[in-house]
Amino acid sequence: MVAEDLKAALKDASLNKQEIIDKMCEFAQTDVVLFWNDNPELTERQNKYWFPVLHWIGHELHTELKTSTSLDVPNQEEKFGVALKRYLETFSDKELIAFYKAALDMRSVILAAALVKGQITVEEAYQAAYLEEIWQAEKWGKVEDAEKSRAKAKADLEDIEKFLQSDAA
Image (tube, rainbow, N blue to C red):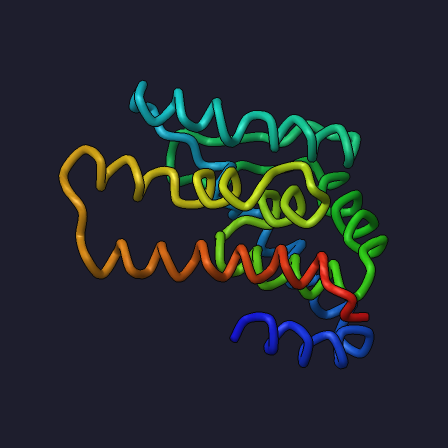
């Protein structure tokens, strides 16, 4: 289902490219990977899955991203938004559509960019995006609805990867 939706969206991508980029640049200000936990177990996982991606995107954008251990949105330097916009403008329509879907699914522009650009695998993207939920399920037990929701999210990420590898133009 996701693959068909992505192919359909690809037809309109060039018409909406700037709108998508602007929305994603705004969304990036509250990216899930900017909000760190102070629990040592979670921090260890965040270091494993989030730190390499933050380092990579910082290198790509020539900026250092600020993170927070509170609910306060970290104030990024203005150059972050400008650099992110320029970076996203280099995406093909196909990459942009896959990126958009992945960013919404994972609540992360940064993880979506890393996935689309091949810096992380689907499994790594999934583990990173749902890091806290997975940890909670391991700690306190699984909730069937949450498990189903995450399984669908992972399948959607796999579909996004297949779409990126397909001949769709």
